[in-house]
Structures are given as structure tokens and as C-alpha cells.
Length: 374
Ligand SMILES: *Cc1c(COP(=O)(O)O)cnc(C)c1O
Image 1 (cartoon, rainbow, N blue to C red):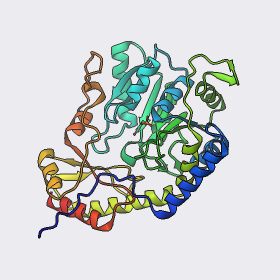
Image 2 (cartoon, helix red, strand yellow):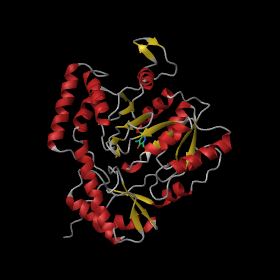
Image 3 (cartoon, rainbow, N blue to C red):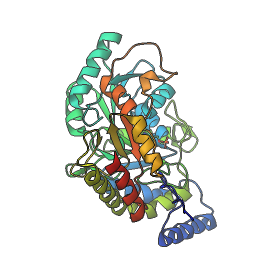
Image 4 (cartoon, rainbow, N blue to C red):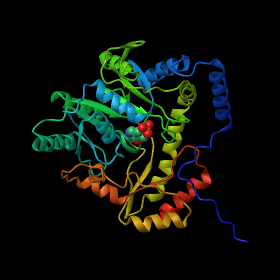
């Protein structure tokens, strides 16, 4: 009898080791028994632990990563007159946040070798936005994509010289570094998401905002809770309700202590894939563990995507595409034409393969075997 091997899943959030599951269950029971469910002691402790982990003055928890972007933009004073420059190949979260704020998203292309914004592509994007709208974007949102760090120091220095603010979106590279600094500590204000599939994931939704600038932090804390300065006193216009609950904070505190270990395991798996693919002439892995990379996603760039997907299917390996449609080519994109060749090429030629810390050796070996077959 031929036994079919179970497919290698793209991700499996239920694979939690016994110790972790026990600690999380204990913490949840403690919170439930406490009767304090929103912005209580776990929330406060996690904000402090996050700020010291990232190396910033303050961390504010919010409901999710999209709200974090919205609140960061609002804290910077972004209004419906403003243009916000970002990339078009990062899943559209910044575009969604711009729409919620009423600002106009404008796009810069990415570097074809890294698929990240650089100071050069940003400069070109600003120039073309100026040519179209007759004014400069007031904010740049830089996404550290797939676990790789964009050159945030260089972009921020250049932007500040132009009087432009910078937001770092760390949702895909949480725990990563740029030189000696953790990502999230370099731009004016930074955001992250704790969506369950991120490197640090909640058991539900949550997000956070980091900054060293007290006035931005004060605005974020007010805006996330109705625009209150103190209870029932509304002093900031544009407030909303975007809170992280006590259960998620308690669970994330436990997981934060394990994050560097999980990120190291992700890098180890990525290194195995790199070795398996080293002699290929038709496919390459986008990132390398030689760089500052925390392995959120393992992304291949292939000449012929259809046949590569077929090879993975034949090996019983689940794949995905991050992301198949650029922001400026979405059905909801406004009129206006962009030419972003590197972003558009990426959308047609990338494949994501399984990369998460709980993958087992027999599974990563099977992925490596498929990579050698490409
Ligand atoms: C997941 C993600 C977000 C959005 O986070 P949510 O918590 O799902 O709202 C924002 N930016 C990036 C880069 C992401 O990967």
C-alpha cells in the first residue's frame, strides 16, 4: 500500500510546544480570574517590555497593525490634503490606512534585487508625485518586507533633510535589526502588527506603535481612546477606539521572551533552503541569512512561476504569493497611471514557501528536495 505523505503546510499555528501552551493557558486563566480585561496590568507591563526590547522611549498597544498605521499617520498630523509615499508591493496595508485617514497614497518603485524601497527609489517617487500633484508627500512609510530590513537610516536622513516624516512598518520584520538598532527605533514613529502569522503573533488581533518623540506618543495614546486626554475629556480631534485587550497582552508577553529563538530557527531553515537552491539558474531566494533578515517569509523569484508551483504541488508542499496584485493595480486603485517595473515584475514572479519555527526536519528536507528540482 502506498502511503501518501501529509502535505507540508504553509503555516500551522496550532503547533505550539507543550511548555508554551501551558504558560499561555495559565496566563489566560489568570487574566480571566482578575476581572480586568482591557488596559490593565498585563497591558502596562507589555508596553514597558516592548519599549525596552525595541529600544525606544515608548510603546503603545493598539488593536491591530492597520490601526497602528492609521494612528501613526494621524499623530504626525496627516490630513486629507497630504500625500503619503510608500511601496506598492507590500500587501496594501499602508494604502488602506491612507484611505481611512483620507490621505492620498503615492507609490515609489522598489529595488529589483531586494524588492525594498531605497533612498534612490524614494527620491524618484517623491519627484514623480511632485510632477503629478504639484506638492511633495509629507510622510514616507517604509515597510521592512518579508523579514528583511530596508535601509531605514539612509531613507530617514534623506527624508528629514527634505522636511518629510518617516514611518517604519515592522510587521514583517519584528525583532530584526538595522546595524545595532532594532527595527522600529529609527524612524519618527514605527508600527507593528501581532496578527497570528507574524513572527510575534497573538491569539487574535493586536498591534503596537513605537516612538522616541513624546508629543507623538501622547497623541497616539489619546487618539487610540476617543481622543481623551483624561477619562471622558476629549481634547484631540479624530480619536477612535483601538485598544489591545488584556488577554492578548498577557499572551504576547510570554511569546516575546521566545521571539529571538524563533527568529534564529527561521533563519536556520532559510539557510537550508539557500543551500538547496545554490546552483539554480532559473530561481533565487530573495533574501539571505548573511544579511539582516529575520525570516518572516521565504520568497523565491522564479522565471516560470507556473512550472515552479507545479513542482511544489507535486512534492506536496503548500505555497502562497505575497503579493499577487500591486496596490496601484488593485480594482480599488484610483485613476492615475504608475510605472513601477520592479514591483510589477515581482508580483508576477514571486512564490512564498513554508517558513515557520515549528517546521520539522523531515518537512524542511522535503522543501529542500523540491528546491533542488527547480
Ligand atoms: C500584517 C501587516 C499589516 C497589518 O496588520 P493587521 O494587524 O492585519 O491590521 C500591516 N503592515 C504589514 C507590513 C503587514 O504585514
